[in-house]
Length: 222
Image (cartoon, rainbow, N blue to C red; front, side):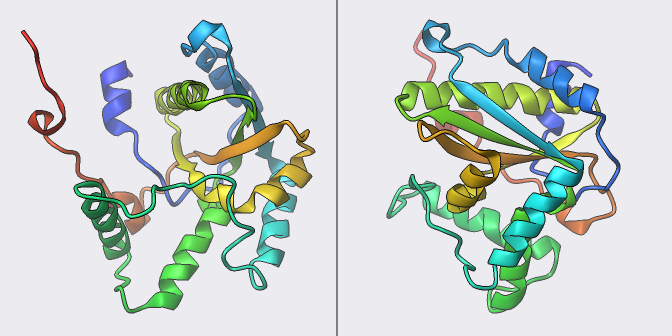
């Protein structure tokens, strides 16, 4: 698979098969992904990989907390800016509508929407997961570096016939993640990522979010 095909076929997978991903494959992906650029070669990313019994224990822990904490524990950073202006507000709204339409859940069906959102906290059934962590002293530039590292992970996964779902939703469980992983105080959770083999029979995996045309976001000064 070439890079263009990997970029075009990457999507946020929300239903995985339980087929295990070999540990060697996960190690290989991360070892190659480290070639991502970073200002001053700081390489500000830290990654924690969960699979097997550890993943089952962690998912079970969060499942036990959800009934009393349906909104999680609060976040350490704003996942979205307050009062999103256009066109960003409409894009976010449309993404949600299109997603729930794939599983025939209307806006009025709050319980089913919450149940689907809670699937985030099971990594959508993926057999492996990653948490991306950054040192608290880092700034916006280094957060961008972590994003480029994550993009490498997602594209390398596609090359190996795997799919992923990056999940900022895990920011709302940062205390539980920190405790489970034994993160030191200077490390801050950014997000999680589900990784595994896509369930092609799941309707929700038919979602393909729209992208703005080139003319809307690019200016050529020549």
